[in-house]
Amino acid sequence: MPYSAPLEAIKNALKFNADIDAAGATGAFENYDSDLIAPVLEEANKLASGILSPLNPTGHQNGASLKDGVVTSAPGFADAYKTFAEGGWIGLPFPEEFGGQALPKSLAIAVMEMIQGANPAFGLNPMLTFGSIEALLVKGTDEQKSTYLEKLISGEWTGAMNLTEASAGSDVGALKSKAIPNDDGSFSITGQKIFITWGEHDVTDNIIQLVLARTPDSPEGSRGISLFLVPKFFVNDDGSLGDRNTYQCIGLEEKIGIHASPTCVMEYNGAKGWLIGEENKGLAAMFIMMNAARLQVGLQGVAVCESAMQAANAYARDRKQGSAPGVQGDAAIIHHPDIKRTLVSMAATTQAARAIVYAAAGASDLAEHSTDDASKAKFKQREDLLVPIAKAWATDRGCEMANQAVQVYGGMGFMNETDAAQIMLDARINPIYEGTNGIQAMDLVGRKLASDKGAGMTAMIAEIRKTIADASTTGNGHLAIVANRLYTAAGALEEATEWMLTNMASNRSTALAGATAYLRLAGDVIGGHLLAQAAIGSIEADDSFKEKAVILARIFADETLTQAQGRMEAVSAPANLVEDAMTTLFEAIEA
Image (cartoon, rainbow, N blue to C red; front, side, top):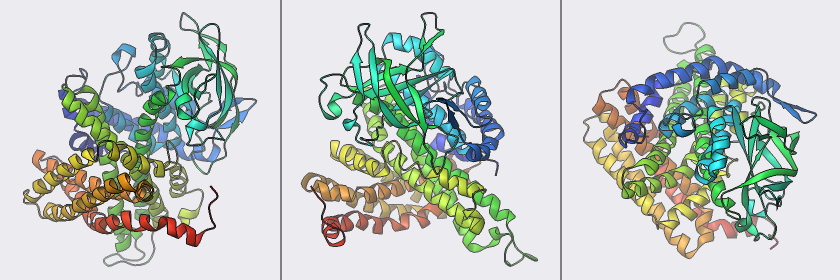
């Protein structure tokens, strides 16, 4: 199935959920004009549909390979990456000072949705480079910025994040890699990292590894972590490449999906690197990368939703089975009511996921570039609230939509050669990496909700109530029903938030047991709010997407918001039973 980006749906989310014009109005993006959106998206779609999408099944079948320490990318990937880099796509949101185009992050997010939708294994490569660029922009020295940023932003070099170790997993404070100071100000890095996405490859001349390690006598735990820049090739004073560094890839992981993305075991044996930021302050630098990566992974969830929906729709139109009223002979299964229900539900969920991720990206733009401190603080609070929801809710929905696509395919969906099977296999990693979705839920309630005593969520609920009032006065019958559904759902979210805040203060363990259910509820209600918001804006603007925007909001309200009351009860009821249930159902846990 060839992928083609849903340009109208993307433009609608950019305008009404990311509020990209508000970012443009800050004056921070001199190169931005709303007239740019359509041609940028159209060109990106040509790359995604014409070059990257055809490589997706062949990459799945062939994958990357390792021989004698050299990783060879899947057939066609190196040439495709060259085309991608020459198009300047990595540089969209980055400063002109280093060769970027200084456009809003939300527009770059829209482009990356297409890349991830067309070929998720390919899309992981620039995704990691984005995180490296973000970290260097904030924490890098002037010398590091001048040496590396231009090449990373141009796409001539790529970046990779080296965080995970076999003995540590998500607990980065337990990592063992060492960084010993050298006389010249550099460090010798020794240790082994696992699950390093695109850590070694042949699509660019140089790879800039960002590596977490401990210096001698550093404090235990996360307080003793430092971040280091470790290039594959050293860079001479004139910018040319020098000698090869001493680290190497010693293995490629065998995975159930994303086969064309080399997931590397990296061995550092005295490799030379340079400190990024302050010693023992690597966690702060790491979270710059992680925050960028979490939003990008949420975007992968959106891309999976879209790809799964496109695959299911195409197959349902082609597959003939059974009879249907008004159809002579065998009918295409798209005529069957349950298939129709599945497809429209997938469409609404996809647009809700897109709305959440784009809203987070838009908040990030305004948090950085608003013209006054109060606005910056408001939008930073919104970004912080939305990122864990974007990452977890969108990727969980992506897996659900992939599952639905397999169901539409029926028995053929269980066959390895089908698009639906690949989509499902590729999608399963998304809820796991860059912090599992359980960690995102704990971050939402343990950091984001508790840190401001619920002020960010309270502000969100107030905005939802305004959307309810606006939807009630449009005169549109569908939106009147959406307003009623959203009213009940907002009440459920408010009640669950009060429960969560109370228990975070008095019984943290019980609260955290309800965190995943709380994040699901929050994503459902915020997604419904954002779809209604976009529908109202579309009607007021009289744009071409307005009818679809209204129907998407209505479907989501009927399918998802109607479950909010039950989900609210699921936040507290099972959480209170967890400890007793563990004792009853499982053997005693050793301390």
